[in-house]
Each structure stands twice: as structure tokens, then as C-alpha cells.
Length: 278
Image 1 (cartoon, helix red, strand yellow):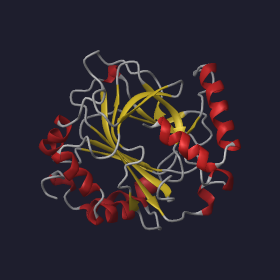
Image 2 (cartoon, rainbow, N blue to C red):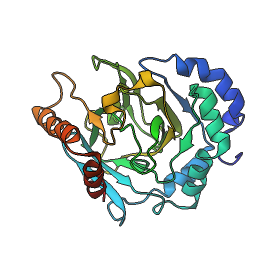
Image 3 (cartoon, rainbow, N blue to C red):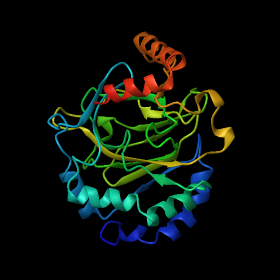
């Protein structure tokens, strides 16, 4: 553990105690971020293992009005340092830290399938519009509760954009903007209105990209007030347009996607999602 974490975050119990109130009371919903969380040499080794996702046999590429990004699939594209990091982040030591920090009462469960997680890369012009994540894991049938994002971008300039944004629960405005700086760990609790994303096209140079490692955590059950019954078992992402900013194409696309989710039986939605993510 001492090799993975930086000296300032080596005592996770102390960190959780110090920051839990700030995290749990943050606006627009529980969230926070830590700079220099990991040993920089270790995280640099992880960043050096970042694959060329275009050449990977198992990867996901999204290109639609909601998102334009590359993502890995499972652990097969991970090098040894990345596996070591991910296994630590799924260990009981780190899970207990997350439990104390977030105040989530239900036992947190990691995702060995990395459904939607793993390496993410957004190239110049790419984006991830404001959205709420799927609520139910399609394989484990567990409730999604928490996201963590680890940024791998050294010497990242403000002009490149790529900020991670948290929006008001009613989608009226952006409340928090977080630059994707190297060795920054961002995390937030996921509910029915935890709107977030990287909505504006990336403006970094052609030889740069926005790279991150994402992990998600689940529980068996959740508080009733976090989700309405209609969306409790949703296994697809819900996107929302920013009024007066995002295109009418996005609105039409999402109207179709939402209709499909409402009309099609769950097993067919799971099949379509599985096919799309190949």
C-alpha cells in the first residue's frame, strides 16, 4: 500500500475522518477530489501502461450525439501496475475508506467485470454530455452507488478543456468543474439526479488526449429516496441536454433511446447494450 499511496494519504482512516463531512455535505450532491493521492512514480507507471485503445481487440468506441470516447473492456488491456492499482482500489482496505468517507451505509461491493469502467480516453473534439449513470449492474443485479475517476494527464493546461462537471440536480447550471490533472482522484455518489459529464468538445493539441481510469462501486439495495421506482432497474445511461447549448440532434436521439427503454423488455435492452459494447 505504501508504494501505491502518496505519503499524505497513507493513513486512509485519518483521511476519511478529516474529509467525510465535507464530502457528504458537498453541492450539488456528495462529491470531492484529492490531489496527489497516489505515489506519483507509481501512477506514472500506470499511465505508461495506457494502451492504444484503437488497436485493442476488446474495447468500446462511442460516437453519437451524447458521447465520443474510447474505453477499455475488462482487465485484459491492463499492465501489471494497472492491475495492482485496480486490485488495491477493490480491496477491503480501500472499500472501508470509501464507506467511511461517503457515509453510505449499505456494504460497498466492487465490480470485477468493470462494467463501464477501466481506461477511458477522449481525443480532441470528443466529449461526454451531461448524464446520470445506469442504476443497476446488468450482470450482478446490484445498485450503483459510487464513482471514482483517476486522471492520468501530466502537464495539462487549462486551455485544453476536458473539465469534469457536476450539475445542479434540476440541470439548471454547472455547480462544480474539476480539471483532469495528473494524480487527481475525483469521486461522487450516484443517484437519480447526480448529473455530471465532460460536455464541451476537448480542445487539446492533436497529439494529446484526456486519459483516466474509472471504477464504480455497488451495493445490494439502496435508500428508497435516491431513485424513483420507474428508473430503479435502469441499465442504460440517461443523458440530458443543456438548454440552449446542446443540439436538437441530441434531443431527438435521447427521445428515441428513452422510448426504447420504456417500451422494450429488460432482457432485450440488456442484449442490445451487450451488442453495442462489443
